Amino acid sequence: MATLALRDLRKSYANLEAIKGVTLDVEDREFVVFVGPSGCGKSTLLRMIAGLEEITGGDLTIDGKRVNDVGPAQRGLAMVFQSYALYPHMTVAQNMGFALKLAGVKTEERNAKVAEAARILQLEPYLDRKPGQLSGGQRQRVAIGRSIVRNPKVFLFDEPLSNLDAALRGQMRIELARLHEQLNATMIYVTHDQVEAMTMADKIVVLHAGRVEQVGSPLELYHHPNNLFVAGFMGSPRMNLLPATVTEVDQNGVSVAGPGGITATAPVEANGIGRGTSVTLGVRPEHMLVDPNGTINGHALIAERLGGLTLLHIELQDKTMIVVQTDGADATRVHQPVRLSIAPAHCHIFGPDGLAAEHLQRNPLTMPVRAH
Image (cartoon, rainbow, N blue to C red; front, top):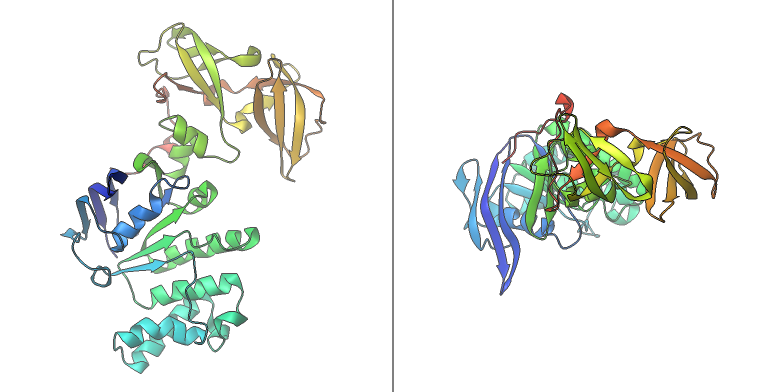
């Protein structure tokens, strides 16, 4: 399909710089997800790639060709928006083939392309229906089919599942992943939902305040966040981030003491962190363990029983709140005392500057993907 390269890409509105020098490579046939909180610039960046926003600075190339001044229609891209933007008076087939009709594509070729897109998206029974007769998921598939028939170099998705309910979003995530594999297409997808990012992406780009915080595979970002922002954003429920003080540094890592009697030795490089340094200890909820022999004392305030797993909201002795993920059959009751321990191999240390200390050893499965 196509490769994209962003080099120090910038976007300003008067005195406000919305995109602050983004450099990124999107490889052929990759599924890349831009993720971040509202207002971080992810949709603006996608619209710059599409040609719907003027580029203030830097270079955008598609297949090695600079396209900063090339119009949207000439870039060979197709965009699927959050709003389906279907013509209500047209049938599914007419909606999917309308852009081809405007481009002067012959009826026979147009019908063949629509039929193939309908087959891929399992829309064949609905070709004669109008959008008002379809479910939300079916309408979103029609919007995607409208892009497929154009055979674009790159598919761009701007939060396409936001209007769907939870069950449909889960179903559509699976369908989009299948579609990516079936089409062998380059896709860039924007979402504020990090669960969507984790489940679909080959490569995730985490954006914050117009800057790239980290680029990597889902497992890389989950297990080895570069900084406090990525650590707190990636993961549901979020990582427990606790203030701590370094008590020892040796060949085994960095030992810290935190709130509520928490102590841990994280297997990380010191990188200038010394005894007495104020740091942040990061522990994922699944690495906080309910343990009758544990040294951390607290009591359960809330138990979220989700079937296969249970989330316990624990208040420690000094009133610090943490979240513990345990087995769905966990019998801990609300207001019951709980003893906990920590899996030290999975602890993270973030220095005073908010940057993560490097782990002494990394799981090869979570090594970073090729990214710039």
